[in-house]
Length: 212
Image (tube, rainbow, N blue to C red; front, side):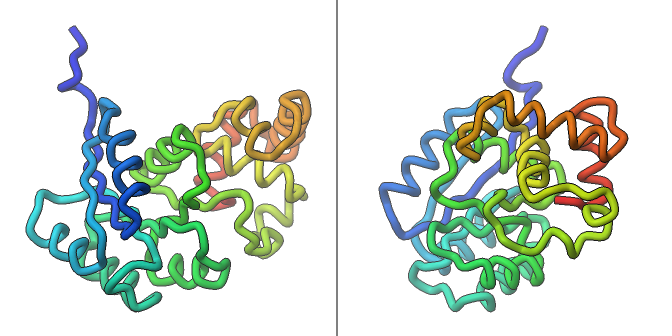
């Protein structure tokens, strides 16, 4: 018989000085059967929790809160707590900041505007060992040799990223402000270009080839 004890638990720490945001995110995520969530309001409290408390799988790190010193703080957490996936969690971080954070070892960027269900999918993708960035992240996709070779368009790449994050066609359509029919058309084109049988295989290829 299946019980909640059979569900792998992700231990999450939210570090954000905005009390309403951190408590809302903590309460929503903590209510999921496969998550435990805690919250703190400063860099130093986050560091102390990572040092003293039970191991955390993921840290959602606000970039503008007491104690933060830019990328150096991100790099410090990445180096000192290698078993924890450090994820930039912000509504104001620039593409340049995100790029630097990824270069020092952050496992992704989650904007605070992401819907709760998409937030869960993004965290689950990160705990599976992948890096998550939203489709609006403007790093030039043509720098990826696989993308250039197979001719994926910007919209197709955006759809593929969200498929890899576990979003449904309906959710993708809402995120991109397009119709579900157009999402399906993009998905058919993606599968054809990537020689994939279906969206699941396309996602596997994307993760394997580090397309996203």
